[in-house]
Length: 276
Image (cartoon, rainbow, N blue to C red; front, side, top):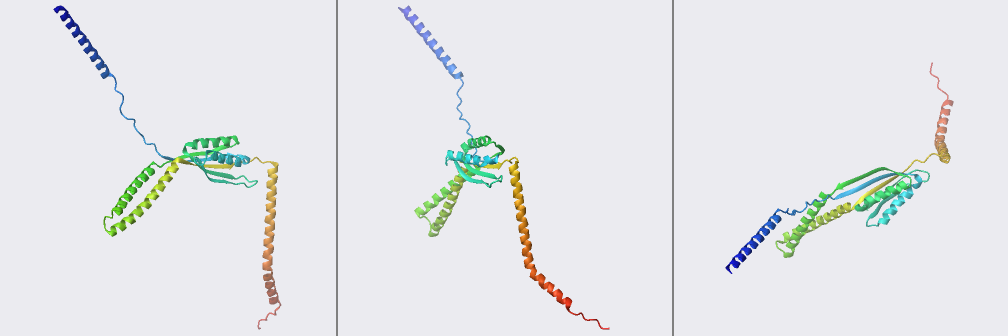
């Protein structure tokens, strides 16, 4: 009986030793495993940019107005929240190749699509791009400074308003506080307006498109029309010159008559002979 108890105790001790070794092995494995990175990713503040697009296109004269209207229609399809027409000018004089101008405000996210589609329409009309200029202005500092100014003025207005509400101080102090509140509120309104303008410049890009007509090839009809216009202009200049000369002669004729009469009288008068 004692022998069986001793054998049981030995077996129990062996099992406990095996479990301890296994636990130690698992602990070592977990300790050697690389720890997951706990640092947060670096946050980078993106600059606030205000973009200005300047595009110049050369087009056949007959397709210039059509292409400009196509660009305006493209802006209208985007909607007023994403595209706004600012200026549209075009020289529609008959027989004269003129230029055209289109100024728009396009959402910054849609500016790339709009300019690309505008260039595609020009190519389809037989034209080509003469110049493309994209300029970005960083207004991040202006936005940050304006936000700080707004916070300062808000705190000042709140503090002065609390002074008036509690009526602490003399009458002169309260009157001065009212004037300071009015001045601070005016500055606050101006700062908020400037902030909205800066945010609008970031949200909407300025797009300026200039159109120039390509020189049309000379033809018999065009040469004849040009010669006819030259002859008509020459005739008008000749008639105008003759009218000017006749008018001048009419004005000077009375004076010439008086001068001639005076000369004649002076000639007829006897001249006195010198004494011998």
